Each structure stands twice: as C-alpha cells, then as structure tokens.
Length: 149
Image 1: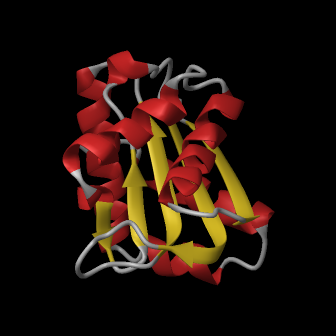
Image 2: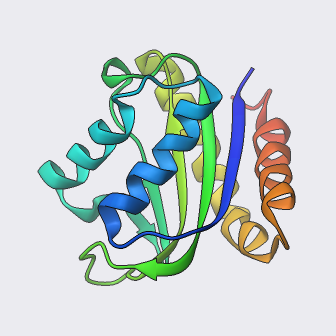
Image 3: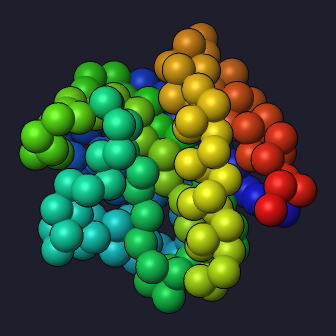
C-alpha cells in the first residue's frame, strides 16, 4: 500500500524550500523520517538539478536508507515557480516526492511515476482545481498502476 498526500499553493523562496516542503508531505504521512527533507536537498546539492525531469517538474527523492520508512508519494504545487538551475526545464511549479524503505520498492515507485508521467500525470495534476483534487489525481494514478510489472 502506498501512502499518498498533496499540498497546494505552497510558497517557497527557493528550490531548497520547495524540496523540503515536498518531502515534508512524506514526513507528514509517516512514510519518511524527519531527516528525509534535508536528505532530498542534499541530493540536489551533491548531484545538481537532474531531478528536474521535465518542464516545470521535479522528482524529489533520496536513497531509502536516508529516511524512507514506507512507500510514499506526494505532490506539491507551488504558488509561484522556483528555479533549480536546470538549463532546460526551469522554473519548477510541480514537485513529485517519493520515498521507499528499500531499493526494490524504490525502483518500483520510480517506474510507476515514470509510466504515469508519460501518460500525462503532470498535466492532470496541474489541472486539479484544489488540494483535495490534487491528492485524488495522484491517488488514482498510483492505484491505477498497481499490478503492472
């Protein structure tokens, strides 16, 4: 079972605040430990803005051993976009965060999100009228992908 959450209209001064807010959704769900948001910031600090996977979209994550307690996915929509320093895909207004307790579920969660993004998930999330709808779109996407290998 995947824990799913959403936050909408989040104000972030910069990418670090945006990443912490997105990963904070997972902490709030109990799927990640309290150090997970800072671990996610560390990923970008050490590896650069590769998490900005598409125009306006960042895929926030850290390694399972850095605080993943369960499988969790969250979406955060920003009130105003922020720059990550990505040459092509800035600015970011939508952040998908995920965490997992182990490497196998990490790969599975990443595969699910990739499939759903290719199927238009980002557009459906951006079209959601409010936080409840935002969470429901993500819940349906994750649930609809269960059972795929």
